[in-house]
Image (cartoon, rainbow, N blue to C red; front, top):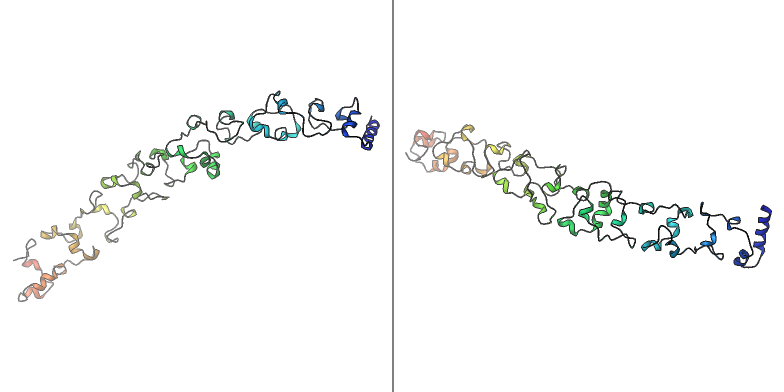
Length: 334
């Protein structure tokens, strides 16, 4: 047999005739006697798909493919045969999309790709109902965002890493490691998102909002991009007008309803306010923002009165004299 095939091969190579004439001269000889069958375990005659003049392209047409369990439609008609028939395999091939295509949704949307996509083109997907088929309904600003803004690039990579996307899948955290979901306080509308219209209950924090703090915009204390929440001490938002002279507990004297209505017990300072001193504005004695270390002698504040006083009075010649020996606290006159 081997000698016969060798002789036949030598005759073919020596013959000047065309390949078609050479093959027609061969009778009762299968293609596989000379050619290796690239299709594993098929058993069909090669001439059903291939011509004698040339092996490729195949004579198997789109019309022939319609007789199979997977007729070619849409973009599949432009695909190369080898793209689906790996290793020249013709039978036993998968017919589901995932058999040839990578599921970019990682199974999160099921295995029926045709529910959203068409063989006419994988994108766009105009009939996809985001509210019905996902757990993330498109509301507010999200309605006008393109699919690629969330599902491609860095956002798309983040999206593929989670099973249930949240706001921080695409958006940077605005409050650092704040634990509550964004939608607890915010709406997805552009106009209302910054003001947290749903309302945040500040009471569970270490700084419940009282009086004038209730009406302040959130951004007054919580600036954009702030990674850590402000501290509950007043100085984290307010400038200390006393330059640290009176400590850091502003609430000892001030209240959030009326800051300038000072509730300071001057008796605790060692110099109790008596008479007209009790109704004198603080700044009249505490000049140059000086709140500690002031002298308590009368002439410290009343030096102009001392200059105008009659010099024939012996006490007026000594600034350290006790004025209250003669003068009263409500009326300077004698």
